[in-house]
Image 1 (cartoon, rainbow, N blue to C red):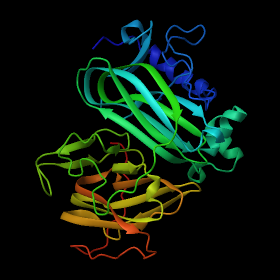
Image 2: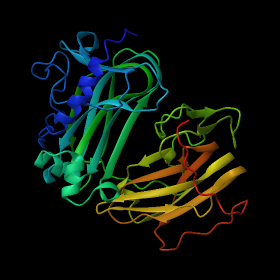
Image 3: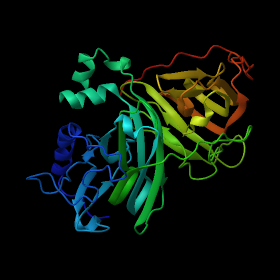
Image 4: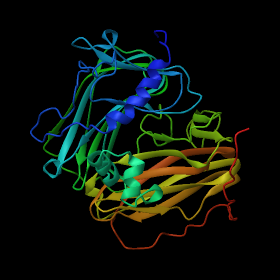
Length: 410
């Protein structure tokens, strides 16, 4: 991997992120490319390497480098790259661009294509497109205010912020070295969507190059109801490379997040989390998002097995349904905590009308002392919604789970 230039570039990229956020790409609903500067050929005026129209994530770490150069070009003169030399702090570094959505773009599929090349990747590179209903973000750009200031003006600050994703598609790739490869993914643009966000990035170490991005609108792919009692989750037992799973972990080192081949409920592996030190607590775990509006009005069941070793908080499974007007949330009535052997967790929920994506989570609060293990997830369609309450299934061990304990940096 090429050597890192002076960290001055990282600081400049972080500063420019705020400025770029106020200038989203103007949207078009006529089949043309919605992205500004899709080939990274244009630079910000009077700047050596920062591409116009694009933004960078802000990690405040000197070990990540964002660059625009001819080494990263798939076509034309320039492309961009992202390199990271340390995974001590788990962050999803990325190039990104925000596209404002107008009502004429609703009920279409947004199709993202981009070329990528991997160089020494240890972790996962990724490309993603996400559709959000985001009133605060929309008004912050119109008013030319920071997001925090716009939220306060709307009286929607903090946990009152109603931002909700209505479509989410990510393609991750873990090959260490690759030639240029084209990635293509699509997401449905649901009614009430305000913005589309394209991200090109890296979770882990190494370097990924990106070029020739395109975001267009097409007629929507018809939604199809899956067969009942088939598992909607990919790599449900973590026997593969875990790439279908979204990973959430508070960014405090030291941390363990990954496959464990020494403990499994079935098969040869499970997912292992351990994080004992941090400044504030947050959610940790894994999830998959199902983008299928045909699930509206149906009933789903999520099951998974969890194991705990001296764990200072509790593991639950959750179902979130994101709708046109908000979201619903159901959690398993049982949990796994302290020291418990493999225990089945179950949650059932009716999917409300106008649901556009469903999140299936295995989750606990971290950082806390102890180890959490997950295995054998199953998300299945049971049939039409019943209106029945959450079933109170008896867990294998009954006790009162402990409250999460906050831990300070040591």
